Image (tube, one colour):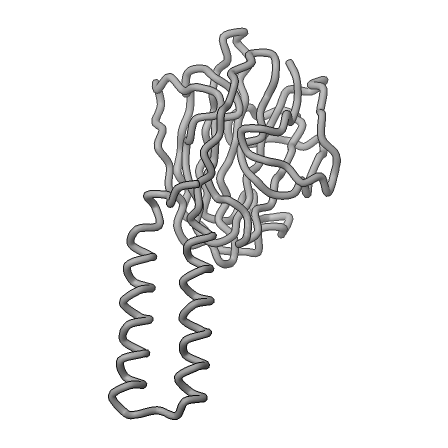
Length: 217
């Protein structure tokens, strides 16, 4: 287990905040009860930040016949829908909701070439809202597989997620299972697959990024 690089600033701010509130309590000679409440709150806050930005080490075997889950969380949507940003046709949408307790690293579901990338500023509706996929702050990535199939996946900010981070751009060669981004404090990832794709998950399944097979070519 390691601490993700995106959490360094948050951790530093948290430690500074903990130091300040405890120093103030000591300066004004707060009661024992108040000090213990602050100690417990400080420990809870520190543990919360550390667990949120944890980044488990994973041994991922590349398999060009499967589509890996891009994020840890729970499957909340499996449906046929119209994808209007890039494909402009019907696709199978699979959505994974990431709660604040999930690992928030986002991983490439397939290997290939990034044929499209776009960042969209937007709203911060709750991640399970029907319009969050089109109205919220988000990124859209399309990767073209060696078999010429294109897969679109989208990072979506939620009510708590106020920063989306991405590490890819158009023309990049990406490897299945490697990190392509990170979303802070609760969010969702949608993946759009060709009609007829074999889906290997069900609604409410708990999935693991880079480990769970979402679908097969």
